[in-house]
Amino acid sequence: MDQFIFLGILAVSILITILWGFKTLPKEKWQIMAVLPKEKSLHGKWEGLNLTYYGLLCANAYTFAVIIFFILGASAGIPLSELGLLILAMLGLCMPASKIMARIVEKKKGTLTVGGAVFIGILISPWLVYLTNLTLGRAFRFDVNATVFLSALCVAYAYGEGLGRLACISFGCCYGKPLRQCSPFVQKLFSGFYLVFFGKTKKIAYASGLEGEKVIPVQIMTASLYSAAALFGTWLFLNGYYGAAFLETLIVTQVWRFVSEFFRADFRGGLKITPYQLMALGGIAYSLIVVLMFPAPKDLPGLRPGLHALWNPWMIFLIESVWVAAFVHTGRSVVTGSEISFHVHEGKI
Image 1 (spheres, rainbow, N blue to C red):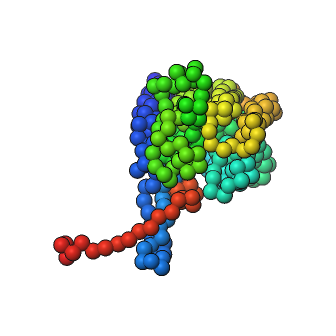
Image 2 (cartoon, rainbow, N blue to C red):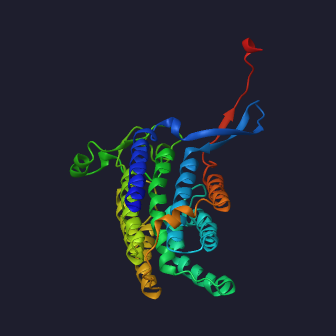
């Protein structure tokens, strides 16, 4: 019953959020959330720092994924201190990797890539767990199973990546091909299901000139598929199928990442098969090896201990810190600018 209620609340909340994002976020006003004045220019106006809904939605998605990770990890009996240490190490490595990999592949400084960060995370996470067990684990007498950790991490990633695609709609990035350039079959398939973006500062407008065009709703498709995979992965995890939960969420997300690249119109590198697609396939092959190397225990997790683990002052502080760090990292726009002027309302003096 606990699982049914927990998964039901998650499913309904995510469905409402995705539907809201589909109808709302392509609009122009849902890109820039706020502007902070930096310094005054020569012509009397202030240069502004744009804070974006992209950053807000990314921070929400990151934080939600971290909460799910802690619930699942604690339900499997992993101590909170070890979970916190490992997730901070992962975020510390993967968040910079999202910029570095985008710069390598797309040759652009102001771009982020979740795909590149995920690939780095898949590569390093089992060995990060192994190294932690060898060092701190021996000193403080704990041992974290790599497959259980990766299972909780991958399920949480599917939630975060799915909801994070709403941020892409807000900024107008990761967009699909215009319907007018697709085959008649694809045009008919998406005749009633598409996105139309508005705003000159959205990436789809300044990078591809597709403002006002009907495009394939890749972001919504990704959000829906990843969220469904995450919900099923949660059920598998909570019933003790750790390896299956890890592989199910990873295979679904990475296969779709490979397939969805063919529907996208934004620049993904100069090759027909993009580096991100190769990373996705490589991650799947690598994960199969990890599951064989680190077999999961057969212990059945408990959902209630996982939920109760969140009600801890240090845990709440950590979750809030993750949100702040994520917003600072992703919310400051470097590709858009603004000018601000201030005046006095004479009639209100």
